[in-house]
Image (cartoon, rainbow, N blue to C red; front, side, top):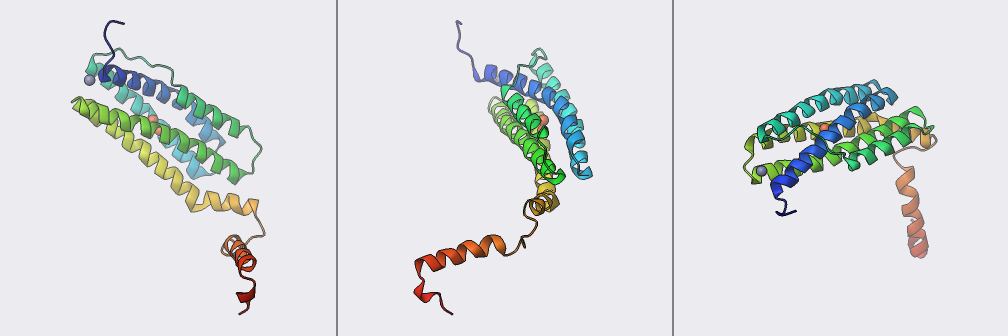
Length: 195
Ligand code: ZN
Ligand code: FE
Ligand code: FE
């Protein structure tokens, strides 16, 4: 190679990687939706599938604006994350636990995308590609919102339901905290443990 690659070349590579990642996700998200037991979780995956199709269109617009061919480049990162998600779907978990695991898999994908789009927005801004930066920012905002929706679904019910199935006899308020504290107290200062 005569000339060293520039940040612009690296940027176009990242766009191709993201383009391929989004295409992989349009195949993976329907599987996550189908495996979800919670109707809200299923709806969240389906809504993000629609957004993902729009994200692909945005990337095509960016390639056109930059005068680049619309072309993907295999994204190994998202492929690995999708593989892990598939492995989890093959496990024999109770329904709430499976939903919790599907959320975990989905959030790994969202965080990977947030990292990628965060970088691309910053690079586009640094190079003065304002239109590309704005389009990429729109996608970044969607990825963040999708991640937050998954967090809410986990924290507003699915995790508790899965945890209750794992530990059916525990009162969630006291058991976990009180036992270790008391043990530590007795082992270090037995004499003063009387009340
Ligand atoms: Zn550039
Ligand atoms: Fe995406
Ligand atoms: Fe996403």
